[in-house]
Image (tube, rainbow, N blue to C red; front, side):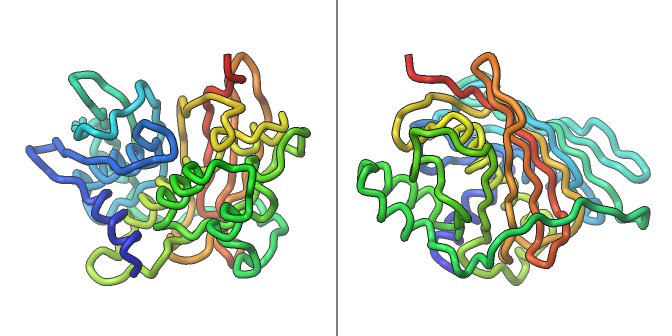
Length: 291
């Protein structure tokens, strides 16, 4: 396991300070606020630690309320909304400086057999043939070297590879609002930590990294890396359909069906390399031209 991955696992291993109350810390992000994927992942950890082990996360719905302060701890309070025979529901509020910055509802289910069907996996390429994040980013002479280093530091625990040029690679002309990335953790997971919740939490963490890319592509914008948009995540929803491993390749197939009123919508499906539909994701964010 890489040191970067171990550091990420330590970040997600939040501290319990009272019954149903947890405390997390933050790490540096590309923008000067708490990374949304981090707070969503930590909130899901808090919820999961109040749920019986035989119940697996199957969905989450979240709102980003205020920018998080990366220099202050985040306190997560868990509300045990329901403990049913098959499903368990939790609500988590993340607080900094006395104000809520994030709210998440998550549902967990006991395993059961049922009907089976899924949307087929789209065509893609072998991820090992694609450039790594470092190879791509260091090849862009138009990017500020400091921005490149921030991107690489924020993603060093994740092996994330774009199938086509990312928004900040080639911009200025609109492209199809569709993007694919392959990702996996930068190292294998094993031992006592290798449990289903951890893989779901890691996928939640990564899911906020690139989902609004397709909005930017539709308008020929390079995004936050080049400063031609301003924005932030507003809400985020995920449905976990089938078991998967975050340390094995996952295809994140993303598109944007709409942008309007200063908001852009991204929707995506995440597949295992053998074609199983593992996760569906939808996110809306503020996406504006700088004023």
